[in-house]
Length: 242
Image: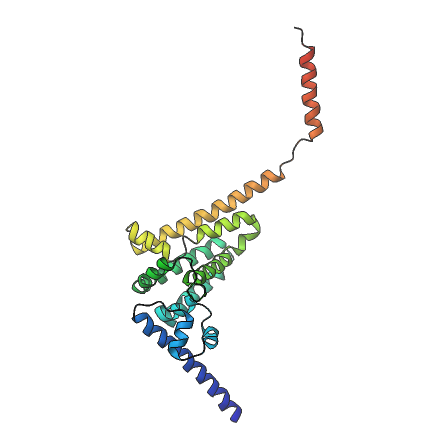
């Protein structure tokens, strides 16, 4: 009984620590700031080492603060369901649609976050921590690679890397704002265009890799035979009457 109570006490303490960090982060965001994990730890009177155990990056912390647990859980559930399919096209379609629907559901909060994302760029935070985009990019790459697993052995390394970078433009908040704000598309049409673009990129990458592989496997004439043929042609040319 004592051991069980002790375990329950530790769980409650962890929950209180996490809640204190989230509450402190929300207060700082309400003041118009996008705080680092270290700044939130200081505000919550929690050691920085402890704070990093709960939120290893600024991106994870702010996602929890801005998009609430339920929204993140719904996004993860939709993505995980899509990844169960053995077809890369289906996986990719699910991933792209899941992200666009997630941004649409929390559009106002995403607009707030995007203003800081654009201003911060790829620079690290003043304390040396990686910024928001480092965490976003890493997570997006993980999901894109999972979607491409069924066709990865059909892609050359260079082609796979190029495809991953191209698909990053389709699966994320950037695609949402480009299609909705810049192009003026509605929710459904924007989703369809992003999905179409991702499928076109996938098909082209697979096709290009197949073509490159076929060209590499195509037999070539031996160098000696080519030389002999050229030499014979030259000899016949010399024997022609003038």
